Image (cartoon, rainbow, N blue to C red; front, top):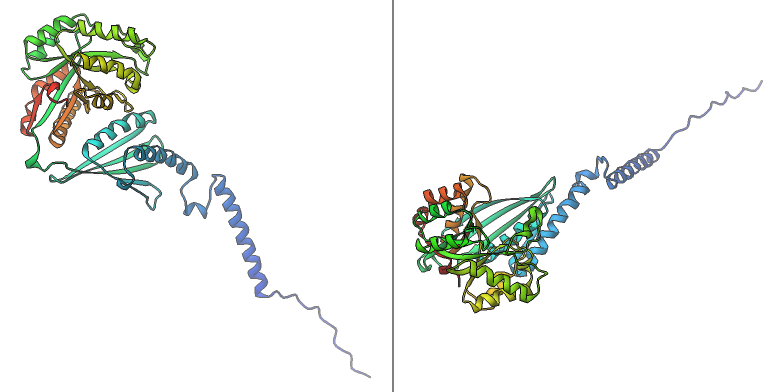
Length: 383
């Protein structure tokens, strides 16, 4: 009897290692694709978020970057401007320019950054008489940071510097004879700027003259900001005025402030950016042999630049002393003005006839002597 073959057993399927590798790779690529899609939508990502900052933050930083880069490119030569982005994605600018150019740029940035609600923290470091460094850390609300390092070579070594001088102009005068007397009693060479239609304009001008204070006309000019009826002040020059009316308003203002040897603007963020209107005003000042100080109420003001081009003795305000009615703040700003005059050779500060301001001036003006800075009239600063 022939032997029977053993029954056939069902063979189990087997998979090669390459097949498992293929499946694993497919799963990984699928997960990577889903992770990428989430990242592009701004949703939670486990892989791609390790290599980039969130898109919203990046766009926020880029908006600030474009503003800073645009302004620097307008006012700084390309060879004096460098920039890079660090490993965390923050932008850095390195700028080398003369100190006076730095001050002008600082004023221009002030209004632009304020419009964007951006805060600026500044650190200053001096290297003898050769160079000063100013590090700015700029940050928008809820936004990313951006850094600017300004390097300012000193124009004159200490031994060759002209005498350092500063002028302090007290604006908005003419509303209080008692306050005017307190300012006169300081016994310092201060400059008072009187609003032409203030109730005691003439009396304050006479009192100031008797006490050897210098007198200026504080000329009201139209402001961009109309809050609080800014542009309803009596004696203001408006952009809508024909030339003849404008000149009449200016002439009447000068008549109401006797002994005025110069003019600075009250408000004026709209007029001081208008070359045509400022030329009309400055031509009249030139005819009357008056100097001009740009109060620099707008970072876009062209008034000082135009006055210089027209050959009018002129200067511009670098420091407002009392933007906060706080003694510590006012003293800090006074020291800033003094140090600025020591570094630059001259500087102009503006303040107002406030009790705390006058108190700080009475107690601290002598600090200028410690820094080798002379307090002078505004007419001794203009050039």
